[in-house]
Image (cartoon, rainbow, N blue to C red; front, side, top):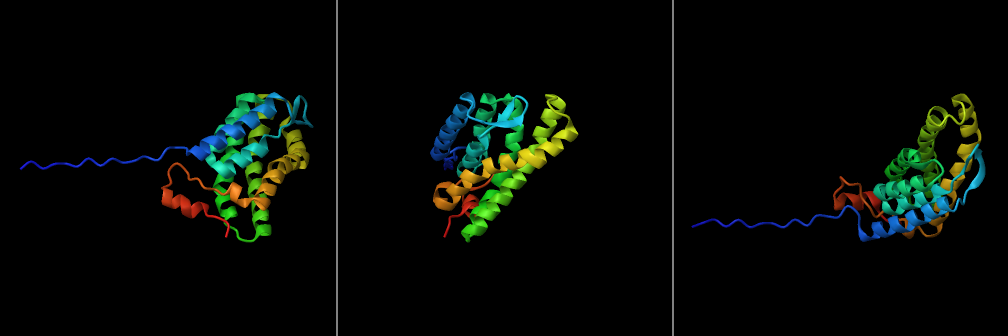
Amino acid sequence: MQSTRQTELVQRQPILSARQVAITVIFGAIAGAFELLQITIPGYLPGVNFSLSGIWISLATMIGGPIVGTIVAFVDAITGQVGILGWPGFTIHVLILAALYPRVYRIQNPTRRLAGYLVATMIALFFQYWWWIALYSFVLEIIPFRAQLILQFGYAYWVYLAIYFLIPAIVLARAPQFVAPEWRWPWQKPEDAGDEGGRVR
């Protein structure tokens, strides 16, 4: 008697869900449009304005996860003032925010949740900033390194913190279900992602 082998069909999960694809398209389009239309705030560096990209990158990461945030950051970078050189800096922010945000979202107290999100944004922006400091000082040579430390952390960092924090924080406070982290890291199993994300109770 010949033994029959039953072939098991394993259904592989797509890298991005339909929801994540939609989020990528929506926020990528918004970020690209803002950059192409030069909707920015003047007063940052010579020839460089304050970009509003942090709003869309933050929301995309919160809702769609690190892959979505990285793609939106790429679209923003290639359409922005600095170009593709800005993408690694944005990616640093996306990865750190994605690592911290699910824990922040699980905080039950709304005030503490917002405080946690502020701290997460401050940490992500702090590490992102070192990319920009190196880029503007040693690659583009717009401003000397020491002068940048004073300018960036004495002034520009706080402006960008407001850009990255305010609108996403309002959404988190008013419509937390809209920014629920219903996503997983590429190496996570679906059941692990459920524990990591969670919902507001």
